[in-house]
Image 1 (cartoon, rainbow, N blue to C red):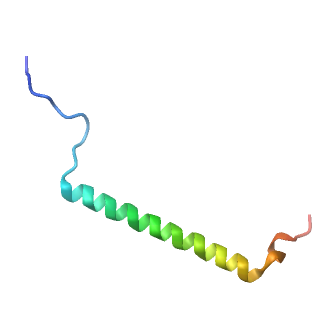
Image 2: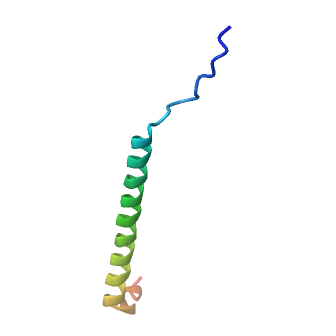
Image 3: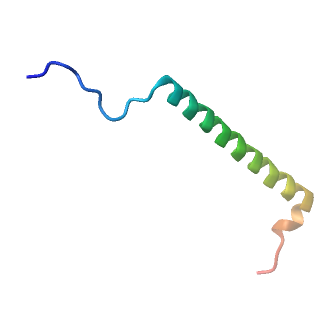
Length: 54
């Protein structure tokens, strides 16, 4: 039998891990900016945005 341990799944290199982390941070920042933008637009429109006919 073979005594060598084979890794489970795909093993990423350090460059791939760093790239994945940078991409995740960029996505998180973009999402945060989008949330702030929606909040700002809602505040500019005022509370009347919640009052609408049924």
